[in-house]
Length: 144
Image (tube, rainbow, N blue to C red):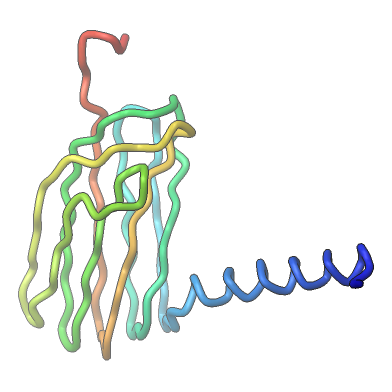
């Protein structure tokens, strides 16, 4: 019968392994800037090179909400896909890059109960690129 401490050690090893697997993107020349506020804001990231995938969580606050978002991708070489994720983890919408062109898409995203915006970036041989996410909280009759 395994001891309590060996069970804890196994659980911690599994958690650490899942965290490492979740962040499997190698990036060089990375620059990230963000203006994150509860009602509106943006996240901008540029890089010289990127390979792999990773999921990001942006704590916006004010609980569950609907956001109107615009995603802009720009890339000189390779491939990049950005997926905006709803509260349950489903893909709200995705944007696929075209080398040498700027590509944008607008859509609606649901925040979770903690007010966290989630998105996933997937790259293959990506060079000289970046993305920008602009968001604004959708006002409805219940919000003030």
